[in-house]
Image (cartoon, rainbow, N blue to C red):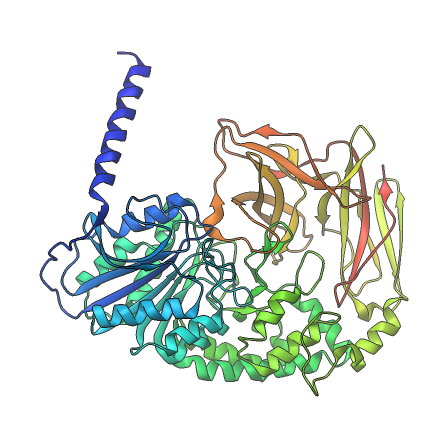
Length: 632
């Protein structure tokens, strides 16, 4: 028998197995008898807002819950909504449907008219119905969907609404329920933050979430349900820790272990934690009142661990790691930072993180500073003003948001008129960049008061055969470091590339031994973003090796990158690099190529075409001053 015939037979057998399996996993109108009780009763409510999530992911999640032989004391109740196609017969987009999960099928317990899944009332109705219909000793809630952090909320209802489920919506919904929860979990990106934890603390004992990007397949629901069956007397903390560990194991099996991060919070510590945070935030806000203090602080904040999306193509999550933030400013904030770090260790009771976030402590915080151009993202600030946990930190954010809309109220200070900003305005126009190209080296001398300078880098260009110059990202390994006035290095000859094809890679996370870069491409004619881990020498900052983390698709400049959009490059995938022209900043497409039989290779490769560069000087408020273009 030929190899082709054998493959055909195997494919037919697998298809029949899949059809048989799916036939058993259908919606039922009668509930199956459960196995005998194993102890204390648990009701776990899973609120699935499926909008803008791949159909295979939502259906696989539900199938996973159907693999468990449920007992009388463990109920998994799911509400579906906000998505046009769930990939399972019997789940209809025009309705809100509530299912009780059982071995091999889902029992349809309730069906009502469609409503906005990102509305607080919809969530509250589901929880109150579930508590009344399936009373238990212990309750857990899992909020499932896309996540975008404090300033942008989570979930997307593609049918009934366009706004996300914001932190204040979750708070309000929980306040309307009659019971508190042992555990509230977020199977969504960037929701593990101090603002969200503080909001739900009055209504739950523990919280499970990721401060960064989630792996696409999310929590291991089969293991979660089985854990409760085997351990019905478990606490919310124990359930959270086991679910956290299971998620990390699952992400590694899916090849997403590099990005996976998750943590469990003791919400009884949130009052003490928010007080400590407010103390450090007050010192940070005060530091922005004087130009010399502001310069020192803003330079250090360049190294804070950023989370989620960080470019125009990815979108912006505006989140940072709270532990790393406190450690970064610890020398300047003194005892206030020490106290925050002490309480953080007590509040974050379990934390697991991948290699892309080596300094992360498990809990994020709103941090609205774009690393791409220094801009403050206005819309997320306005959302944060509705859900902030610290008045002092809100003042700090508003002091960062110079020239942005922050809806000043009566009697509030206009920071455009602060002493620090007046001093900055008097000095910033005196900053000048004089650059030169001699032999094989490029150099720049910066004239003016260096107290207004935050960072210096080199923007690289390649010139094609038609004389068109386009960007290749930035390089940072040079002689000189702020506040030095002289900078020098060889004319760049290499840039980050995929299979030898140059990319426009932008640094989105800055570390001492490794950086993370993001590069826009078209993946099979759909806009996407490659995430790349670049190891570097701690002293010279030269890149020593690169690794492809993954590729995200379906992104816009409104919604930030979400792990549920993540894919791995596969054989025959078509890749088209995206660049910006030097003159007009318009996006242009490079030469397309396909991924071969070998694994994609990412690393530095020679720049194709003529090479040129220019020095860029960023000031402490994010404004950029560029030198002249040097080279071909």
